[in-house]
Length: 428
Ligand SMILES: Cc1cc2nc3c(=O)[nH]c(=O)nc-3n(C[C@H](O)[C@H](O)[C@H](O)COP(=O)(O)OP(=O)(O)OC[C@H]3O[C@@H](n4cnc5c(N)ncnc54)[C@H](O)[C@@H]3O)c2cc1C
Image (cartoon, rainbow, N blue to C red):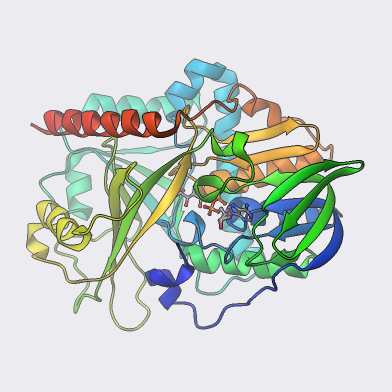
């Protein structure tokens, strides 16, 4: 079972606010199920619009993906914009990209507006290719900038290798709008702001049932019952059995993260780029140098996407080998922290956002691209519940579909192996 405490991020938090477990009876306009980014943003945005909100978290705030991710905030979705355009048409794809950019801006402004401490936003994102194909990268930049309204910058191999000194890398795409953060500190301070706005937050309060009631819904935890006109379900890959129709639509996919010991000297001979780095492989690496908190800079490195939810026993050794494969000059980097997290994917790799029955909303399945899209989802759902607009309809083509259970996991794992084999072929 995940807690916040197994991550490097947890080691950076001196003291956290502890919220009570729910007990007894209560009434709210809206009950939000889940205390990750999605639940917190929805609750905050509803409270800002005058709704009374109860947020129920099964364990601790941000103990799921939100407190254990890579911390990259960038526009877009887990699905590529080209595939989105093929499904919803170029105009709607451009609008969805606009919403995803609004999600990036939401996180940036929240950090500034609420004076969040230690979230340490560092600008810039670089996505690099491990094979030589300049036209492919140039086309990607052109399409993104001109067709879909997300400005990107093309970097040739020389520019990439000036910042990332690795012969593995060729062309790249620089995103000036992207940044990286300490996600746990962001989530915990978002929770504090949310509570100050009047939301009742409950930890160790798993919602175990939700029934229709005359004026909406009645939800129960092990110690109490709450009524609400509307419910928003955000549990993602950690959602238990309470909402089976939502749970069945989500495929949990694991990814693993390590953090090095502080380097004695900044490893400029390998990485002299302060922003977030990823590679274009279907199941690629993502990494960044963490801001120096006094003892030297550390390297955070993530990857190894798999449908096997248990962490691999040799995570440290295999990640050391992955790092050395790209940066042999770093040798065997000593690693101090290693953890895993689950991302919730729908079969179409797009978020599930909308009202699936009168009063029952979902805002979940953000996959591996959730820092901006959870903010976007929170805004869209809050606006829809408050009758402000119908942007939520843009997501309507992405219905809830059965995730396929264990067979889907086997198929997706097969697809990952196939994609990894294709990536290796492209590199040769
Ligand atoms: C290792 C890792 C690295 C990642 N890196 C990045 C990255 O760099 N950039 C990026 O954009 N995205 C990244 N992601 C994805 C991103 O973290 C997620 O998409 C996002 O955090 C999802 O937020 P959420 O609120 O939907 O879900 P979660 O954060 O998983 O929260 C769901 C919460 O619901 C609670 N819950 C479930 N069921 C119940 C119930 N019945 N009652 C009450 N509570 C319940 C759970 O306990 C949990 O706290 C990464 C994910 C992982 C795992």
